[in-house]
Length: 150
Length: 150
DNA sequence: AGAAATTAAATTGTGCGCAATTTAATTTCT
DNA sequence: AGAAATTAAATTGCGCACAATTTAATTTCT
Image (cartoon, rainbow over all chains, first blue to last red; front, side, top):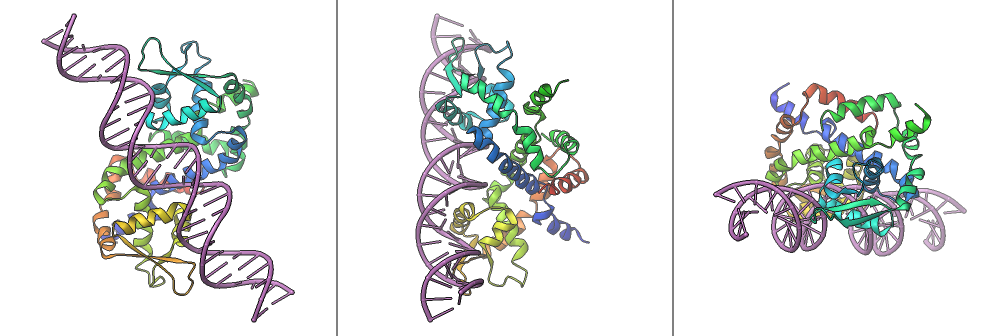
């Protein structure tokens, strides 16, 4: 087995870590789709709602959280988030307004509908678990290993 | 710890397997970007080239491979592939033409530039490995575990 | 205080992904 | 053979991702 052969092997699709990651990520998101359709959310919108449901009860953010805050949690920039947040606002799930303390920031808060949606979203994680071909413990173990690469 | 608390835990961003998958997939693709920029390819275009470099020397496909074949390897449909292949054709890396045997099919072949590009792409897998924070063996192990979920 | 640098969002433009539909060719029935 | 069903790509439309730029507000220097 020569070095040239090693390089040829590395160029094969099935040997590529990143392709498996890319394909599996799309596959699992596809498994979320029917569940999130019920809530009227896309997967990235669902992630934003998770951030808001988790942070906004916290008295640390009485006026809402900034776009920057959401972007840091999800590793997304304003080019992705601004139009996404406008859609969530258009669907009545959130409010957006400029911060009074720092006019550069836009603060995002949940609307009543947005707060209520959390109850309907509670079934999603367990439902999804059923459609994945692995035990919860195995998934947690894999999750922790993958997180180490982030 | 009540069941309601378990559900609240499951709704937290950091506990979600899928978010880690989604974020890591984007992060690793971002690490490919500077390398692929050198080749004038996006990551999905690189994957198509990998399929072609791997399949087209095979005498089983003397006339090229169909869009369907590429789509099955990459788990992508014609809605994604048709415009992507048109861009690769526009950049002179591939040829596309209707099959004579079955006019429904479009056969994709490598151009001379497309064949030559493989030599320049040979450095990519090793270069990428250097930018990932894990040993090759660890990555192979993770890859095999993730592939089990595909 | 006033210029320069930094920061937060928004905007613009390109390229995916994917659902849904359309078009055209081939295969399967009867 | 001819209708019906199936198949392969293409097309249409929407929503991300992300690079690059712009706009406006705040902070840092001197």
